[in-house]
Length: 110
Length: 112
Image (cartoon, rainbow over all chains, first blue to last red; front, side, top):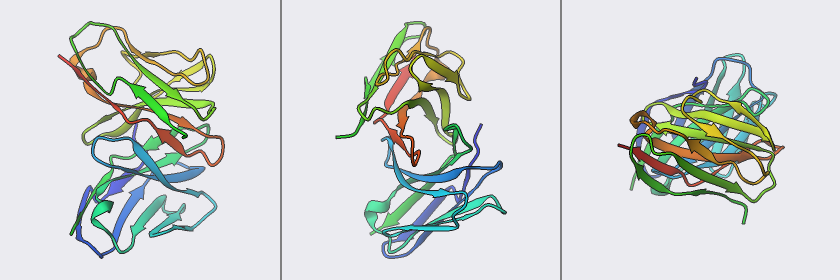
């Protein structure tokens, strides 16, 4: 069954704007990961945040984690047309029990 | 180059005709898994393997089999495919730390 639920399901922005996607989950986790998927292709790992971390950065990506609210957000700053893709959060409850959400479809218009 | 490969990439078959989708990784990862992706449902885990000769069911194992005779290979077997198994399938392998998954390019299967 799905663990993560992304919000919104779809997001359309102009190039240069920031994009924020949210993920909520139900059970305790060891870490939470964000992945990107270009249409019909394999997922690519973006960033991992452990349960004892609150914020993490990687280039234009910023991830936050609030374990009390069981939620995470992914912020992409200064978006580019090439950022157009689907973004998934995945929760790892331990023993590599990974659960993915249905994803947020991001469209960045040039 | 570290990678996960899957074959075939595209497959159209008929109901009941046994098929195998191969998966291979060159990163010496112990953990491998299979997912199917369907619109609106995200990725659902079919089977996973913690190591050679150790496999376990994921969320949607019905109609599928796997084997793990070697560390690098983890084939997915559909003994008698049915149209509800039409989907996009991904194989993935996972390192020990920090547990990020490496995904294959996907296999688009259509069962008529």
